[in-house]
Image 1 (spheres, rainbow, N blue to C red):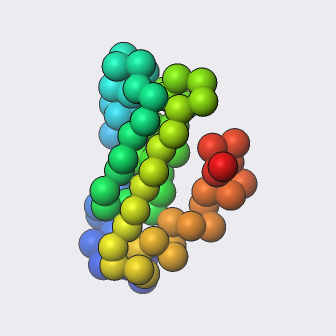
Image 2 (spheres, rainbow, N blue to C red):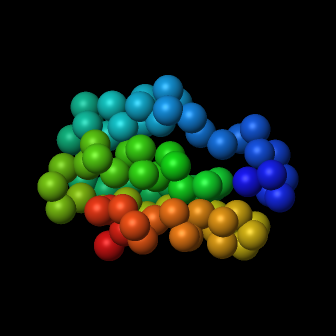
Length: 79
């Protein structure tokens, strides 16, 4: 993370609970996250989706997407 620009942009646990609550409260079936940093916010929102819901996240520049990508496969939300 220290190699990325603006490492202070990383979402923490408290910030992650808020978008999870919003996706749950809205009974969201799909989420498009534009601007992933480390993948944590996407992983935070995923449990709030309805069963079978879909979350798509994209990041730019490519170095940030490459940083986030390895954090997703070991989770139950990687599909």
